[in-house]
Each structure stands twice: as structure tokens, then as C-alpha cells.
Image 1 (cartoon, rainbow, N blue to C red):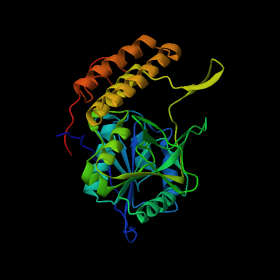
Image 2: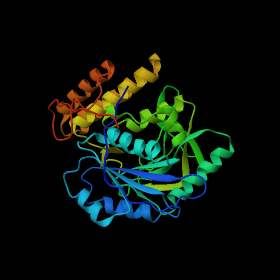
Image 3: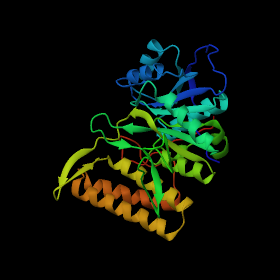
Amino acid sequence: MERIAEATPFQRPELEPTRKPGASIASVTVAYNGASVIREHLECLKRQTVKLDEIIVLDNASTDKTLTLLGSEYPDVTILQLQQNCGVGGGLAAGISYAARRQQHDWIWIFDQDSLPEAQCLERLLDAHSYVRDEHRKTAVVAPICVHPQTGMMCHGLSWVGDQLLPTALNPSKPVTLVDSVISSGSLIAREAIEVAGLPRADFFMDFVDHEYCLRLRRCGFAIAVARDGCVGHTLGEPAKLRFFGRTKYWSDHAPWREYYMTRNEIFTMWKYYPRIAVKGMTLYRLAWHAAGIFIFGKRKLECLRMMFRGFIDGRAGRLGVHRFIPGSLQGMSSSISEV
């Protein structure tokens, strides 16, 4: 059974009895060296038109002044601290475990540290859930539209089209569009779904954590909805705008270690959940195009391609965990993960 990292309470305020009749809602933000961005993020959470019952920040062993800032400026925020960087996967698993299992909140609103939800975002996500519920659907996740503040690029979910996951076009005539997967930041997750499907995979470390979790929830029979009117400002990488054969392309150049986790976790997920030859073929086709993009546009071509290959081998073999590569290093490293 997969184990998750232990989060030590760094700051746990005495909460006032602010819970509304009905559902209680907590936010969980995974932070790592976020002193320069997390203040704006927390102010957006505090300005929500629907008050959160608890704001939780999971610090992923930051080495900057993140903890100092949180402790001095936000005494009303619950701060959980990991003793080592367990990535997005380990951070989400530990934070959601605390909010859903220990605190028993009904809804968990998860975030990256740089995400900026509009003031009415939570209210609109709850309205969207009411709409889906009226159609008698068992809903696990309600997600907003994520918009890159600089480029205007939008992310509003993926859906199965044939044998591949493709971006979903929103239905403008309805407040909600059903999809098969969304990115994690800004997603509102029901505790009921967490109890059935479990937690996000800590052993993914990062990348494809959200998509694996969504696909697992769908396999458990839950719906995933995107709220047309909910909006979160979120940096979707740092895409460069390029001209290629007269066409405009956006390309995000990733570090080699990111290419490893992206490839490993996608291959593992697709081979585990969708063993059909057609799905495997489309996955390999997409990765081949990505490798071609690295060869044409990438800055560290050979390193990235080598790490993609190692990620493919480890994904097929089921070698997961944070035992391979971590940020800032291409050396094999190991980390122990203990259970909460």
C-alpha cells in the first residue's frame, strides 16, 4: 500500500465556529519556496465571497522565507510542514489527507502557490456543483477555467476522443461542461470521492499527478465538471511564442528531470488503466511528437531526450517514487516516505 509523507503542524490556529449549515470547505495549497508569490495567493483566498472554513498551506520543505512569512503575517492559516520536498504528489496527498480525513471537511479546494482565484470563484464552483447535482450525477471534482495571466492561454479540461485525451471545448449554453480530466490547481474535490478513490499518488512526485487522479475518479464512476464562470489565474509553465513554417506555436522548455517524471508517470498511468493497443499507440505517438519538439526547439536536447527514454523504461517497469531524480540534480537519489 502506498504511503504518504508525514506533515508536521507548524501552525494550527484555534478555528472559530464559522462552518455554514451544510458542507464545510477547506483550501489546501502546496508551497515550495513561495515567499515571493504566496501572499497574493492567500489574499485571493481570504477575499472569496464564500468564506472558507479553513485555509491550509502545506510547506514542501522550503528553504526560503516562506514559513517565516506565513507564521508572522497569517496566524489564521493552518501551516503543515514536510521535512523533505515530496513534490506536488506528496504535498497534495499529505494536505488532502489532513483536510479530508483528519479535519473531515466536505470539500477540499486545492492550489499551487501562484494561483489567483477570482473573488467569486468558489461561489461559482459551488453553483456549478448544484447544477450537476440536479442532473443526478455523482460529482468528484468541480474545476474552474485556468488562464495564464501573461499569454491568456486557457486550460479547461481534457476528454477522451477516440483513444486519446484532447482539450475539451466548453459548452457556452450551459454553466457546466463534463470532462474526463482537469489540472489540479483550483479544483474543488469532494471528500466522498476521496474516501472511495483514495489520495493522489505521492509516488509520482510531480507531473501527471492530476490526470492520473482524475482518470482514477472516473473509473470509480464519478463525474468531473468544469465551471464556465469560475476563473483562476494560473501560470501554465513559461511557454515561448514561436513561428514555425508560418504558424504560431507555443513551446514550454522543461528541465531534463521534468521530462523524466512527465514521461514516466504518463506511461505508467496509460499502461495501467488503458491496456488497449490503440491507447498505447496514441500515447507513444503523442510522446514522439513531444520528442520531436524537444529536438527542434529544446535547449538541452540530448539530456531531455535521454531522460524521456529513462522515464519510459521506468514507467513500463512500474519504478515510481522519488528515488530517481529531483530538481537541481540529475543524480539518482532516494527518499523515504512515511505514513501519516
